[in-house]
Length: 467
Figure (cartoon, rainbow, N blue to C red):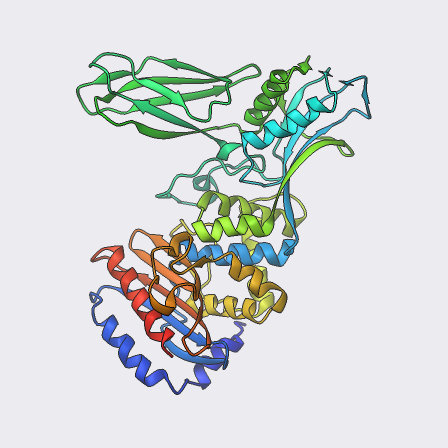
């Protein structure tokens, strides 16, 4: 039987004394909407535990990146506020004898989507500085902490995402992609100028692409083996005065990491007798080096900048912790739904299929969003931490250029959401009189542009700020 949340009972039984005046002002704004628009709005006074304004709060809506509120709340719920996400270099050798590791070296990822080549290089430098000279075995990449279903289209039935993401893997280096700069300034028929911006010094470029007089696009084929990373560029690009930039995704993240580690060890003068490969790291093992990011810092990146790739990695990380098995979308979805149930959040109409919100198969209600934020608000140990991960009006993230005038600047901590035909805005607002409000607005539209609806979202927040 569906539970009715505390917040929804408040909605049904009590209306704030300010609601009539506010309601009429909000309705004036909403009259600007085309008749084909659909919207859900819930404004809740957390100070008084009272409803300020409500419209269709139990109607399932596509939340866009407001989905990240549930993903990041679940991460704090399961992993804890003090958690850190680590990438480790380990060995199956019992000891290092005279600078020699008589065994294999493994690089294992535990879901840090921010891990970069520069951090890997620092780890290798530390090994070289410690006296490591020879590795007799292989260099092995291990991303088994997550499943190897790297693309969302493969784990969401009938999904055709309008946002492509790099491979979602437990082992990530530079987002599992090569950043390629292509210039077509030369004469027609001359080779394109191709540069891999995060080259690491190990990428072999084979370029047969030409400057053309007609509109074309270069094609990229990335291959990785034991000894090299090879990028083949074919096709062409119309002559132009400015470069274009492309992301070329790695299709085998653990092998990519193993090759980079092997090449970097060699760069620092460490002899590697074995090959680069993929496999499972041993238990137990000896840690040689590690790099971590705190969960709080990762969630700040995800929520403030609405980073979809990092949100999907965090989603699988939640699934790994929840299941105590392997990070995948099924366990992650179950984790979020279990959290919703255990917190007593209004759950009717909620469907979660990803961690970022770029799927149109996600559905939530503003009742659920406000319930979630209310639970966070009344959790003394979590509230300030979670609020610090949200974009701040007029100051940073996706709200840097919104709600940036008067007293509103710095007083709304929120999460935006944008998809084709969808906009959302939810978060915490401190009013001019010192009240703490929780706001959730989700709009679906098929006429006018997104900026029109975002302006109305902002105008609603401006109205309630004056309470």
